[in-house]
Length: 419
Image 1 (tube, helix red, strand yellow):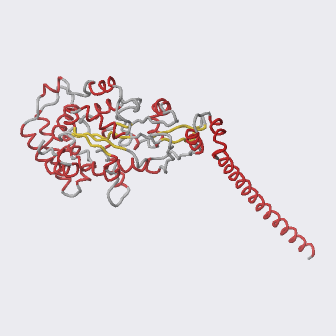
Image 2 (spheres, one colour):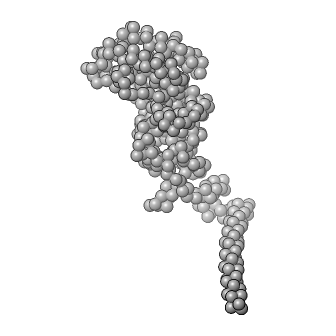
Image 3 (cartoon, helix red, strand yellow):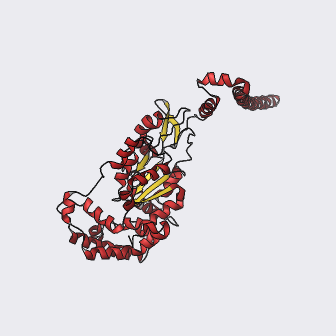
């Protein structure tokens, strides 16, 4: 019996020792952490006290205390962010750096320990065949806007729904611009004021995959649009849209996507008839937003309507989504007809909206405003001739109520029923 009591006593004593050692170890770790925080606090007080300004300036190798303060504060933020490489919807809040105009952050990288990653500062969201290529070419001639990006990457609208779903696949599209212009261009006090954009005209109207995903997941309520996904990544993004008369836009797109020698006004008329018939059938059981974004495929009538994307000209639907997500201050809408006639004024307005300032070099600004137009109609397209008068009237009647909604949203300048 005595031996059993002794055995229990020894076991209890050992457990007591183990319990206390664990607590002692935790207390020591807490003490060391607290000591480190206090030490860093003392160092900051020492460096930023009035008597030690010269020491801080000398330590950082700058000329003024304000520059030293900016650099020191940024160094405190350079902790490596361990981002989980997932879809944009599941990406958490990104720690944007205050010394970069572009939304940039440092994240862990296997080669160098950390890597600067950036999202676009702005998006040219469309609309196709409204001068987006021409506008983007001119925008990227500004000395503070990088031209080292590819136009029309379509990652948000297409490629991310396959094996390129992770956000890193999108970010790497801009690595060259980031490593050269975004890192390399900076002011005297170390502020990186260069930016870049994503010029993908399908961003405005092509949210079909989001609608498909919502239907498969039995999602209740209105499915999100591309505007919602962009806002989730960066709520301060800016968007630019350029519009033209939707009837003229549709015919221009038809000629662009059809091979030379096969396009003709009669075939265009038949495709328009099928497109209007499909839209009318869709609206019988669905909302306008659903019918604009959710483009069905498969039936013969839908195949006939291909290359005549009627829904793209119902501008107010996707503009309402972007305005709801970002507000008017973060969105600029341009009318192609004004852009063509007042190119100087329009480009100044664009640069002011992007916060990069006007182009001071008169020679460069003249080059920006006088370069040749991009994607003008080819000789083969002009030989096809204009659309049939009955087709024009058919489209004018179809777009009339939607043009009224656009005018109510943007003002009389965008009244395509009159202009």
